[in-house]
Image 1 (cartoon, rainbow, N blue to C red):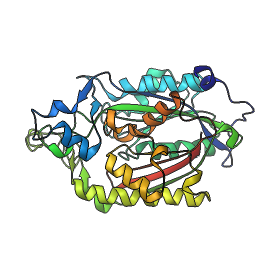
Image 2: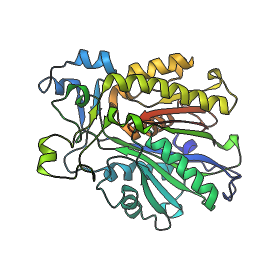
Image 3: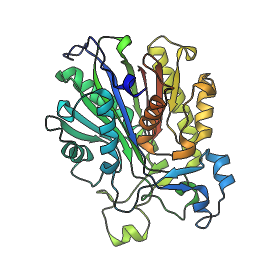
Image 4: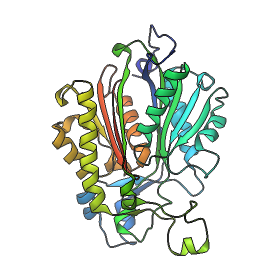
Length: 346
């Protein structure tokens, strides 16, 4: 399996111009070794393992150790993706990181990752689109590759959310985990070598209050008052988020399939944002995608925001479920509100 994944794709031509096709050449991921079961929260808030499982599908999640930052996870995820793609960091022309939890406000996580990888030729920046951050970053990287003649790029989706939730708020603290996933993008001559077929992105800023982290920015800068009011913690109106999430994910997935003239029966795999098992099951049901085609990792990792899709993708690839040539639909929603879907042949 390892040799198959690392085998170079034959007949590749360097990507030049807007007509060049782009494919995912390698995947990688990293989750912290610290496992936090549902029972951890029973002494903190009024909850139980049964309550959490029945409402979210989560039984455990991974959390960073104190002092561990986003790029500490993004680095091994990126290295694994580069290894699978069979290229060196020095071959990269671009690094885009989708995250809302970079190591610091500035510089970007992508610039820190560029330095740590030794990717001296790559220009680097972050994309802040919350949970769909990986899909947004994928779209940006694909466009820049086609417009600038870049041969290889690295796209990372990663988050450290566990230190941004209020452990007295039952509605949020049980949901989130930490992790990072990465893909290497490279040129393709068509579907036989993989190809990103289309990406569809949307936003509605009028819904910003439904899911937000209000403290720490220029509106509510760091201060003792900000900390005392708990403004550095994630705030969510769960029921409203649920309704908008289902509708937006269904619409984005339908848009992607219609744009490529395919139906759900032609998909090999569906990877939805791993936010809540009930949301994922309802979206798949409305799209008429059978459960056996839905990749689920939320039960063991929780909601890892921008990391959830690339980590699920990498896990399925390395387990041998996803194979070269498979047609895959990914779909996500998040704070902003932002949402989007991508269809690609691996």
